[in-house]
Structure formats: C-alpha cells, structure tokens
Amino acid sequence: MNSTSSRPSSNRWIRGLAVLGALNGLAAVGIAAAGAHALAPYFVERGVAWFALAGQLHLAHALALFAAAWMCERYPRSRLAPLAGLCFLAGIVLFSGSLYFRAVGGEGWFAHAAPLGGSAWLVGWLALALAAWI
Image (cartoon, rainbow, N blue to C red; front, side, top):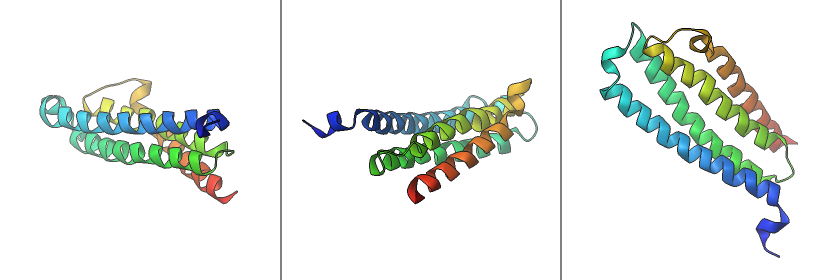
C-alpha cells in the first residue's frame, strides 16, 4: 500500500491546492503583464492603483494556496486547512477579480465584491492558524 492510498482525500486536497496555487501565480503574472501593456489605455481614474493592489494580493494568495496545501499534508485530518484554501481562492476571485474589473471601468455588483473577498481572506488566514493550533 503506498502513501497516497492511505490518505486519498488529503492527497486530493494537497495536489488540488498546489495546482490552484501554481495556476493563480501564472494568472497573476499574466494579468499583470496584460495590465502593463494591453489594458493600460483602458484604465479609469485610480485604475492603475486598483490593478496594482489586485495583482499584489493575487500573487500573495497564490502562495497562500501553497501554504494551505502544505497544511493539508502536515495535518491530514484537519478540515480547516482545505477550508483555508477555498477561502483564499474565493478571495482571489472576489477581491482581486473585482479590482481588476473596476480598474478598466467595470460596473455592477461584481465591481463592489472586494469586501467579500477580503472577508474570505480573513477567514482563510484564521482557518489556517486554527488548523495549526488545534
């Protein structure tokens, strides 16, 4: 019996969060390049600052997905480590996504989803801390 068959659900979270971390790192760098070159003429007032903040926090939370994957491996019975990863992913979509969208003049409910994303990140970091603590 190999180690992956003894903890299949934990292994699935580890691999999934690591893949999501890598893909979000790729996306953050690609979006930053697009913003610097192709999207720059479309930025609204304060759009450059919104886009930069979105990119910085997007990349930081791509790395946080790796931290959640590591915590899933370190504490395979924890339900909080996978929750943290899901919260980090939700925060990327809602916070960074909404700021990227607003930077180029996007309107509607999604343009104002940043507080939901920030809240998701806070819950994610708390869940990660609790996963290590308990």
